Every structure is written in structure tokens, then in C-alpha cells.
Length: 183
Figure 1 (cartoon, helix red, strand yellow):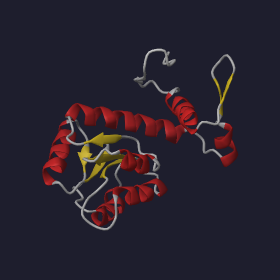
Figure 2 (cartoon, rainbow, N blue to C red):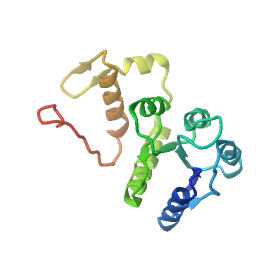
Figure 3 (tube, one colour):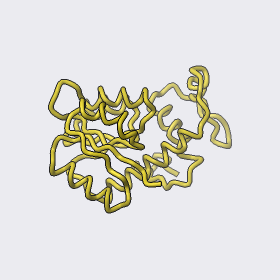
Figure 4 (cartoon, one colour):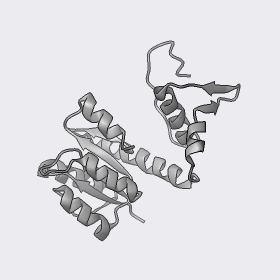
């Protein structure tokens, strides 16, 4: 079964290049949505497996507003943006996207991001739902030699990512300065 992708992008050249790349890679691409209103309409009609979502297109809504709708409908998404400033990145990150691509895109980066996003979505779908208490308990994670206890939101995020990616066969690239404990 070919996976279906909805592209939400108002820049025709960018959107068309994405469509062509995805077609060549074997994905099914729905008609391109050039506005968020079109995107919301297409969600029900085409039932995409993944959405490539621009953060800004013309209109009152932002991609972050649309992402909140996607989350409630359990539809995974990857952000597309020409603007990579920290404030936008943090607002986008809060919606829990499956990836973030900065324009201009390289085909290899798009395909790799999609592969990782689909793998992560598969892992998330197999995981049982967690209660608030269980999410709060995730602050303490076993590392095989003892528990890691932290109040740091950043470290909790790292531990959550480890818990999500650990059971999968996906490769993970860990970046950091020498001596920071990447091993």
C-alpha cells in the first residue's frame, strides 16, 4: 500500500518540487493545498497518512493552528518553513511534529525525514495510551544501572525521545560536544 501525503504549501514551485520528489519515491500525493482552509477540507476527503505543513501561507491561520487540528485527528505531520527563527521553532515544537524541514529542501532530506516520521508514528501507534500519572512518572527512566531522576524539562524531553526511539530499528544521530556523554 502506497502511503498518502498531503502537501500544504502556497509557493507553487516548492510544492510542485515536493510533489515530484514524493511521486518518484513511490508515495501517493493528494492535490496540493495552497491554503489552510483547503487543507482542512482535504483532510476528510483524502485521509492522508502524513501532512507536510507549511507554517505560513496566506490567510489568518498558521500551520501551528492547523497542527492542533491534526493532533486531535491523530494525523502525523512535518513542518515546512523558510523561517527558522527560535521563537517559531519553539511554538511549532510545542505541537509535537514528527519533523521540521527548512526551505530550500533537498530531496534526500525530505525522504529521510518522512521515513523517520513514519517509523516514529508506527512506534507511537503501537504504544498503549498513557495516563497523566504515567507521563509524570516518565521523569524517572531506568538506564540499566539505576534511575535517572531529573526535573529538567530538557532532560525529560531527551528521556522521552530515548523511550520512543529505543524500541525501533531506526538509526539515530546524536550530536553534541566532546565529553557531553553521547555514548
